[in-house]
Length: 129
Length: 374
Image (cartoon, rainbow over the protein chains, first blue to last red):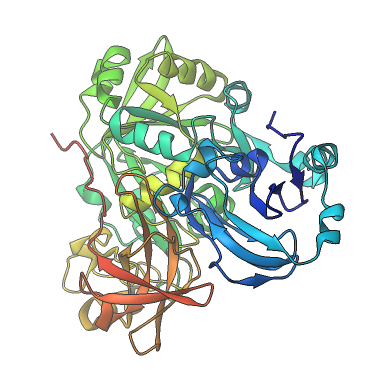
């Protein structure tokens, strides 16, 4: 069974979202997503300063087997990226919810946060696959 | 989706794959393990360091018999089968009238009047029809459902030594019939990883017992199709339908070594196979495109289908297989480029998500083959 954390929000394209105290959000891919992808060998994160709309392609994660797009779960500006992934992409497999985060955004529309799935909602997405 | 899965065939090891926690995917009409819980990278490295066990029972095993079968088979493949002694094998391609490749295969001589063929799973029914149409006077027996296991890696020979010493004495591209725990097996020293190792043909009902016996050795771990693909890519070996197909000739595919000298222009058995005129002309005159290996500069993998361009942005070819090399820890690829770009270290570019990525042409195999030639 994959690890789905109750304190996080999710989207059905398998990104997780953590609301930080400073109002930014941190984004990564779920344990289920890293497990389906297999060994991650390359991650392309967006550039800091990029403005993204909800659903925009924000980057790519590639495993030995395949490439998979990362989408912006909300609209906003990219304020930080996880540079560890450049040299150690396998961190995504080892620690998908902590050290393996992808990027951080400053949301431009707080109402979008209400549309995100909670852990139970995401569990249903995973179970229906 | 579900109806599709119901139609998938199962190999004799399907139950074992499930027990081992394999991720099963459709491949060549079969439900096959793409990886086990260890994952592609660990499975790959384990095969290079110790020994991996692969289920390749989806491949087609065919026995052809009859007086004059050697000459008949030679009419379909550009190989001199006369050089084989009993239990010796050779790589070959079935060519078509245009010189393209219908499939690649391994032919083993069992006797003067009997040959054993192993063909690709995805092509086996067409191959069978091709053989039946072209060799109507011979007995063609499709060993449907028979198991085929591959034991590959530097520890494979030590394991085989404890199970069947006669098989452990084999050199590359030779076979022997042995008994392992009372089970009759045909073992050859061959494979698709670039490593020393063996392929074991065994009756369906005995395949699981032999696989379990092999997995009992601590050196041996089960390996899925994911690692099989990265291993063969490092070893510079073609995957049919990707790195060569009906529109690619063996000369373009860099398989000139597989065309026996006597079948070439001036040889004593010159031509006499489908597409000979085109293929022999290409040997003399060269081709416009050729298959080469690449090491990708940077970390982003370049996948099958990516267009290749030169420094001025002009199209010069395409990638036919691409992925990540766990041994070299860089992305690698294989593909076709115009003949001006085949020299090692030539820089070309692949367009990946709109961005040009540099690749360097590299001599294949990218990881040294370790076949045991005695």
